[in-house]
Length: 126
Image (cartoon, rainbow, N blue to C red):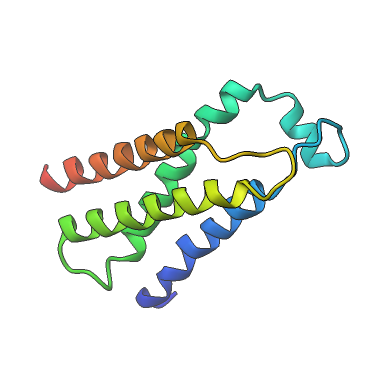
């Protein structure tokens, strides 16, 4: 993959998050996806925001390497892109039956982003 085409990886990741966020919560088991999420408690589902959005931030950092020279700049832009998408994803959920937007989810998304980007920053300073 040519370096500048890396940008498609976080965009595809965001499409996957969008697909997950588009699954309505009708309370009934109607598909295989419903069966999978049925056994995952709501608390665990909320905590899964941390690695999910941490992964997105990491993807953005990696994808931005050919576009932005400095580590700190890539970290900042990856954080901004991930945070904006976090808000957009929660807003999108307002239109999905049985789902709702949550500032708690935005907070968990931000924690995941900060954890991964902090590990990247520490690794690059070592």
